[in-house]
Amino acid sequence: MFQDYAIGKYTTVPGHRNGSVSATAKDQSIKLSADETIYSEGEYALAIYQVETGAVRIYRLTANGHRHILSFCGKGEWFGLENGKVRTDFAEAICETRVRPFPTNQVAVVPIDLLHIALTNLAKAQCKQLIISEQSALKRLAAFVQEMADSHPEDSEFDMMMSRSDIADYLGLTVETVARSFTKLREKRIIRLAGKSQRIVRLLDRDALVALTT
Amino acid sequence: MFQDYAIGKYTTVPGHRNGSVSATAKDQSIKLSADETIYSEGEYALAIYQVETGAVRIYRLTANGHRHILSFCGKGEWFGLENGKVRTDFAEAICETRVRPFPTNQVAVVPIDLLHIALTNLAKAQCKQLIISEQSALKRLAAFVQEMADSHPEDSEFDMMMSRSDIADYLGLTVETVARSFTKLREKRIIRLAGKSQRIVRLLDRDALVALTT
DNA sequence: CGGGTGCTTGACTAGCATCAAATGTAGTGG
DNA sequence: CCACTACATTTGATGCTAGTCAAGCACCCG
Image (cartoon, rainbow over all chains, first blue to last red; front, side):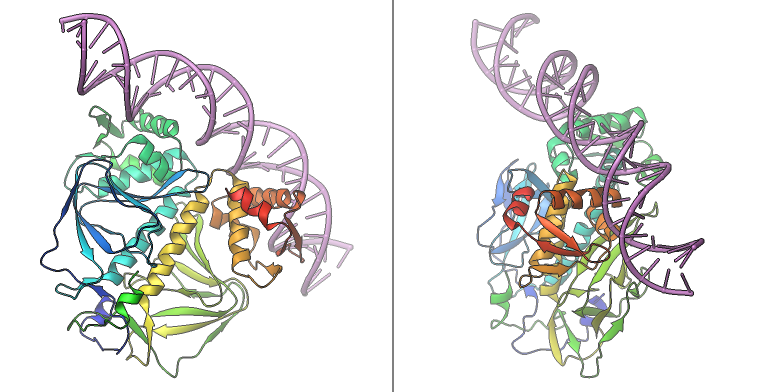
């Protein structure tokens, strides 16, 4: 909503934060193997990250020890932007992943639009609220599969990467319920599963899938 | 995380959005009665708002016609910041409310920290995810009551303003379950309810309340 | 007084969590 | 090549919780 306003009508407000961060030439991308942690709760937030390849899970641990996955970040998505100095969540690579860090305390070379990143993440979080407040487990999983499919628009078949337990902690369900809902989707001929851990999805009937989510 | 960096180390990036919006002297606060709508889905987003008195509900309607309340905004909180030109949600006054609009297309007089607003709303949305992914209805309601109590730190008794059905649509429960959970909290001597619609809460045992949420 | 609204309570049922076991796949060592 | 382990997924059986439908209550207002 502010993109068009701000670009071109830029006015300097002395002493006021400009809302951008810098990318210096020496920034390198970081290579991570599966389940490697990028940052943890309580650490100082010194950088934000963009996913180059692979996928990342952002999660929190509740007081009773349960893990809640706030979001999955795929290629091109940004994470690690917080409104305090200290991390409130964890970030881990789901599979072999490359992320690019952007330190937050350097002089600008390439300006980064922090507001846009924040608003995109806000929209993602709001969308996820609608998904996890769906009443039935099948609807939630259908919405999740649709979300995954949308992030692979070119492929009729894609690898979800994440385990059943990741999906369960993302949707607020148990592993067993997720597995049962996957077999329901298989039985309804909406998807076909492949791969050693059944994480490769081929979408057979997109219309039936979206019909489920309504 | 960027507050300290940006303020004082401000560097101008020509042609780049500065992430601030203006407050002009002629902006007036708007007075609304209960259930009056402030904006609707599909409208052009021309302003952001700050609550002066009262409370506001932000919600979306799903394809199957269900209302999901994304957030409640109390005194001092900001809403209406979107990342597109068009509203994706509805905003309504819950009770008698005064909000102050800040048009997004004017020259700056008082700078507004949009990034901070966006990150605060993001943190709120993430916190709510943890609440509504709590397994039991009693835990969700306990977390909600705690949230409401935290927003009235000085008062031992406060008016929630919103109806049971508002709370239900916020927590992803039904009205009946919300009512039943309230009576459980009453029976456990954790809260006392008053007022014609039982919307005034006196917190009797805060420790027991937080014990429920863990 | 009658109707409307919002909250509460009751009876019943569907669906998810839980505990438990089976299946399938990959890797290791005999 | 086959037995054995390790791991993730799937399936099965059971109980409990929250949704559903229905009724009752309290309050307000015409």
